[in-house]
Image (tube, rainbow, N blue to C red; front, side, top):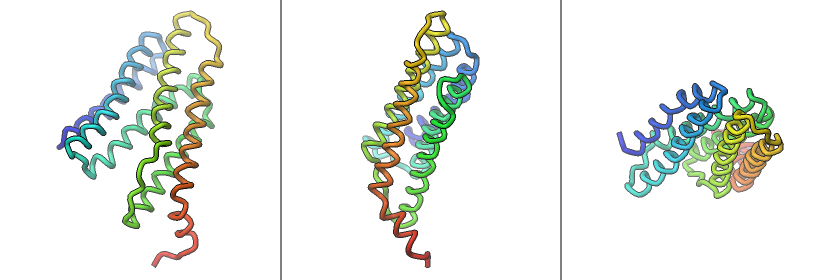
Length: 188
């Protein structure tokens, strides 16, 4: 197993601990959950860097790395829905984008094409991570008795949702020919 795949699997292993601490609903639990989330987020960038630098790109990594990212972000968003800091419909929009783009990548792969990552996808990931960190900081400070306007939390939620919508649009626009071709030409 490559170093990059070990890093990715370590990220997945952090997720249950992240969830457990985040579900405590205390400032202390949130601080630990935030640290775990940040460590897991850094490993996302680290494994990609190591894979490219040391030529450790594998099919296993191509499958597991995006899965690990989506599991981590989804866990955080669901926790914030439960806390009332993130609207459920926003999480649905974010998850719908992920399902759509994953399906589009599958269609491209079946046709022997590689759907390259767009800059909007990278920005989306960074904004989502920043929004989740912001929401944890909001929760920590609020849990310590400091009254903060909920508009601060809403800025995080809206930012993540809007950039995700844009990224989904960008991918669909750039790759519409894959979808359009499949709608008009029956599979042989």
